[in-house]
Length: 349
Image (cartoon, rainbow, N blue to C red; front, side):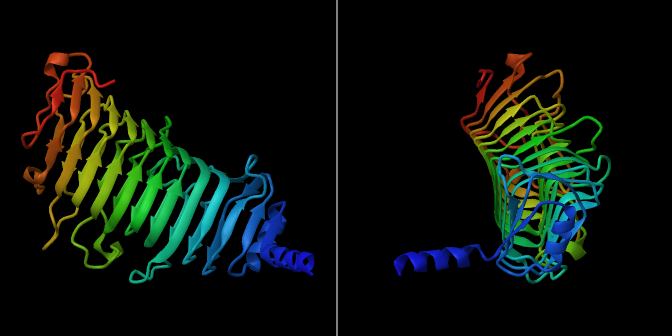
């Protein structure tokens, strides 16, 4: 009797699994998707251009994680709209003209889509020119993006518009010649309570990490937000190349801590204000602490690029290590405020 019960339970647990092995069976499966389904996709090449709307507790994953399915072409490889508790794992995506993955709240700005997990996904060759993202997220809460690799994109590797309570961890962003990457990660449109940690950025655009940005007011989540981003933590990342290491753009409240910065090409940081209007907060209250920054004076003449309408006097710099490799005696940066316990001219490596 006990054996029969276990067999029955196992059968019930597997009843929601749908296995597809080619493009035709995938299209058929998508027509009949139900909540609480796990879509297991066999190895091989598949076209992009898939759209799923309103399906809850959906998992899309490789049947064989060691040999994931490869989605090629289309405007978006996948577009998920209002799919709460969605999991995507062990997929390959390349060659889209719009975005690799596009996930959104279906335009319901007051009711975010929640519980998204994206892990072990490889995305490449998106665009190549224009505002085309590896992963575009609009109006999502409780997002985890883990151990993904994005190589070659036209806009942002990951773009958050009005996303909250989220984590980006262990991801790689590799810029590619011929692609107009503006940022590796961008957090804007009212985004807040987001952690970016343990990621590796290699020539990941003009602003490898763009904390804030420029968003039309009609697209903010929540509506009425008076800052592009708030409560953002960027910690324990490796940032190599890019015009700057990070830009703070219309953010109110952020931390940039314990990161390693190697050879930014023009500035170390940027403090900017691109969204302006009555009541809109200036870029302010950012803590930059415990970072190791190695640069070349032949490239970096202006350490911090400060734009109009910002509040650089509210920034705090503490315990950072600054090293100009080609002119160690000129390592001390020109900051908008006095740094506490900074170390200059000693190679942090």
